[in-house]
Length: 383
Ligand code: ADP
Ligand code: MG
Image 1 (cartoon, protein in one colour):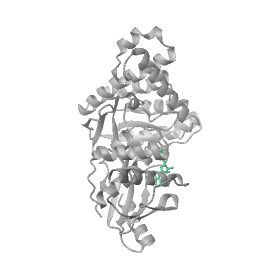
Image 2: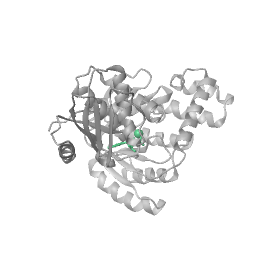
Image 3: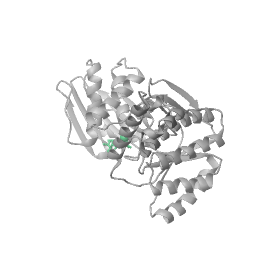
Image 4: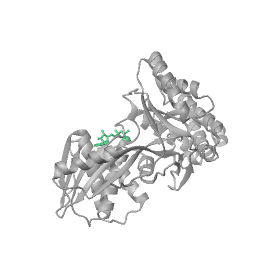
């Protein structure tokens, strides 16, 4: 971390010729359980991780915003006095979108010079996009002392991603990047956005393994799952699947296709599992937690059908080492991406060794390994 901060500061000095006045960090995240439940008004249980986006900045007296993205070797600038439009550069739109929607609520700030530098792996499903949005919003808020509460800040960032970038994500990523707490996961009720901090056992690491499986149809499959969940809610005559029980689903089983039935079954059981996992985690009941994560994975595999053969293999390999000493499942939207494991610190190396050997042997793919712990959400970095 310290190295990243120093690099960000020295890049600022080099590019602008004067020192930065502030460094902000915002973390990536991993979801421990609660997959595809967010848009069904259900529950998710993510934690922020020790991979972050860092932003060094300084206020300007004019209305110019200057941005340098070190990791993209990219530059962008725009004028806050004019309408903020889309850029040709993909990365710049996350930044422009956040400026646009902060400005909609608070127009009383002037220009900023910025340097962006992060170590959240890009496009791996650990939400480098939310880390970028939240670090930008927190920078503007902090430099200009804007009265933006954390939930509003997360919503501004989500709006930037939905409306400006055009990615239809839920609120979870921006929320946890803003509100994460060291050594805690956050149980989020996606209906009313109420949150509960859940302490994590200190003997467990959060191990994230990227399967490096790439799937071309993620967006269309995601939209299809959303439609199927809506269809199920309609047949069950509930506003969202959050409001349905497994008994209600069974009563209506014959009124829906088998596919829609299984989609609904995943969401309804996943909500229950997420609440039970939060309880198991806070009570240090690791066996139970492991069972819930395993059941969650199988539900994604068989009922929601969003895993991939290589991801299933990776989960099985980790599970074969971990036994009932922790839990492992696919995390994120699906069709590839990462696996998350909660594992005792002394099992990390054995897991790494077996995965290194077996995953390639079984799938021909090479994994990427990230050892994490639950971290604080966005904030000022002392330099
Ligand atoms: P994920 O959020 O899973 O990492 P996304 O595709 O949602 O993947 O977001 C990745 C995109 O976010 C990058 O391609 C880039 O446009 C932007 N981004 C993330 N981190 C940075 C960064 N450090 N600097 C510039 N752009 C970034
Ligand atoms: Mg993203």
